[in-house]
Length: 270
Image 1 (tube, rainbow, N blue to C red):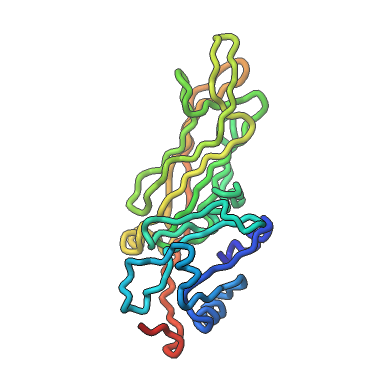
Image 2: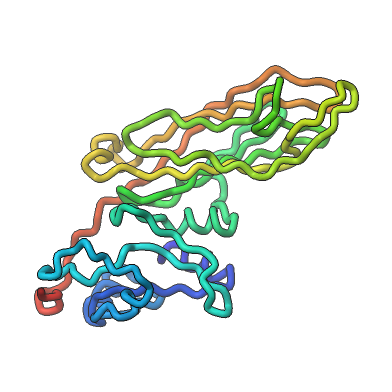
């Protein structure tokens, strides 16, 4: 969250995190990680219980009892929840960068720009560090010249644009998120087809594997290579061109878990 604090603030949003940890523990954590947003202490889990997110599967006789199911709420200026991001598996967390992209459309600058035939492609989403079990969103943004379009999913008789990631034990991919398409009337052949023009973005959220599965797949810089391809058929107002397939690549820096503990005197007791 700290890495994206300024982007969150730029959206007119505040940022706070609540935990069952004591003020002392949170202060030690904030000092160590240089966190500058609000960390709120709920040592008796009263607020956590009131939101219905207490993790009831934890043994009550352990120091971990009282933790919430991890997640993120987004509130409007009236304090009304307008979106929430929670997962069934408590180990899985959405990165702030993924939420900013999916909720607000804020993609980071592309780490690679590809001049493909009939369009320009920007690849982003893999430049923010992540940890095992986190969810990140990969994005492909295409810019098309005037009077050029590509076909959207649902078209019949033509090849729709598609994004495909190469399978890997390092992650599990969600279905691709496609933007709404424009309907175009092709008078010459009396057809109405769904298309994308000028600019569009495809997004695919993936869940990184756990540490045991992903660690052997990282390179010496702790980077995970994710490869895939963008396939499309472009047309202008006179002709349709040969379908194209463009190889894509993301490099995701995977951080190890932070297992540093606070001093013994601050640790929570059963």
